[in-house]
Amino acid sequence: MNRWRDSAALWATIGTIALLAIWEAFVRIRNVRKFVLLPPSEIASTFLETPGFYIDNIWVTARHLVIGLAIALIVSLTFGALLAAVRPLEHASQPLLVLILVTPWVAYISSIVLWLGRGTPSILFLVSFVTVPAFVYATVGGMRGADPAARELFASIDASRWEVLWRLRLPSALPSLFTAARFNVGLGLAAAYFAEGAALSTDGLGEAGRRAVAFNEGSILWTTILCTAALGILGQVAVLMLERWLLRWHASQRRTTR
Amino acid sequence: MHHYSQPVQSGDVSSGNVHGIRATGVSKRFNSVDALSPVDITIARGEVVTLLGPSGCGKTTLLRMIAGLERPTSGTITIDGDSPESASRRKRFGLVPQSPALLPWRTVEANARLLQDINVGANPSSLPDVVELLDRVGLADFRDAYPHELSGGMQQRVGLVRAFALDAPYLLMDEPFAALDEITRADMRHLLATLSEPTNTGVLFVTHSLAEAVYLSDRVVVLSSRPGGVVGTVAVDLARPRVPQLEDDPAFFAIETTLRRLLYSGASAS
Ligand SMILES: Nc1ncnc2c1ncn2[C@@H]1O[C@H](COP(=O)(O)OP(=O)(O)OP(=O)(O)O)[C@@H](O)[C@H]1O
Ligand SMILES: [Mg+2]
Picture 1: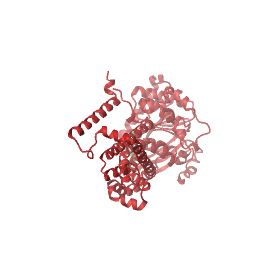
Picture 2: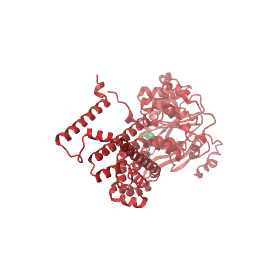
Picture 3: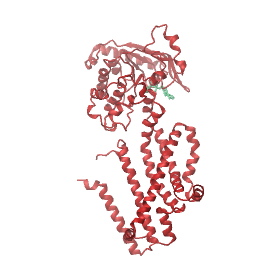
Picture 4: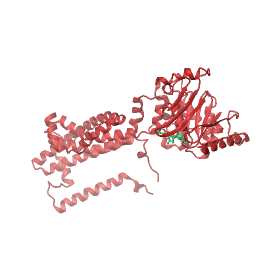
């Protein structure tokens, strides 16, 4: 009886249609200027005029995001495992992590470009740099949170550090790592978009958006913005699906019966 | 680390026997807390020894020191003449903790195999068949289930299988059934008795339950309240194999009563 009420996909679709309808109506009725907000129908037609242009740029930004996050993850796992094992080091690294979190990128992006050069290296650096703290916190917290009774069990047969790390601490950190990943997809995308516009690169959604602003092209700007949002949603869905599969044992993935 | 293996020669050569677990004058102090007064305890292969004592008297602490997870403040512990650290390196202990401590990302079968999968170099040449052990404890149909799909009693059975799968000469069990209801608990002690029956394993079992102590043990060591010291040791010379009907036997009650008196005298002593 409650099937249709519990269908998440159905309600998400209804919500999306309602949002688009209200958006379209609002822009048309209030006669909002193109540059301020573009109605969805015009975004669609702008996209269809030159789909290749947008798809190419989505692809470039997606690559920046994925490679940047992958670098951040590798650095964070290595660094985090070390911090989880050595408490003084964890305390010592706090100022650095907090500094990365609170300092606005706008302030130092030019220095990065000056240091690493224009284009990809600077963009990848920024994406990785800003997403490292959340991954490190997740790694340290998750690894520390490993079941103490299980740790004793491992110690009772003299498990090596590597075995404890690989078979106990890393899996224990997975749930918090996925939470961080969902947060970092959004953060990393914003960083990639911003860096593309600021690092004098030749392509990417951020660069397309910057040029649209420079040439006062409201429809291109809004189509770029929506493409960026679509990429973000795609990223979230990808993380969610990976999480479903890798964390099928975890409480968060359990189907509740009502 | 090496000073642990030295006392063997002085302490045990005189008795002519270094086999079994031997704790001599072992005490533990945590900062300002005296957790355990010096105690002597031995566990031979094929023998089930139970530690019975009020809460906080140091039972877990003693068990953890034997397993090499904690250093004694004084005294020596040897396992077949070896230090606890060296014994754990050689996988001589099957530990059954109070909480089942199953890894939620491993299936039942993979959890049961956990101790086999770690420190593989120290495994004996042939290991028990995990699938067969799971079958013996009635979990054959749950091999591919995840721990969260099991009841508390089933989880603890996986914990037992995980320890038995190691085929270690010594099993150390810290109140493994404490969180279970009375009926499941009784089932579990019958199961444990049958599992350990034909083996040559030395078992150190910690419990609060008098019935559990009598049913499973060859000897019960009663500790006084914190800091725990040995109040008395009671031999349980009931026939083996132990069967459930035994719990209605007057001899069973008699031992239970002896233990209760000892326990209460030890609890009021300090
Ligand atoms: N790591 C520790 N640090 C400080 N004190 C500890 C530690 N472990 C145990 N203690 C103290 O040592 C005493 C004995 O603890 P232990 O856990 O051995 O008792 P127990 O006999 O197992 O009790 P229970 O039956 O409740 O499990 C307690 O007073 C406890 O507070
Ligand atoms: Mg205890």
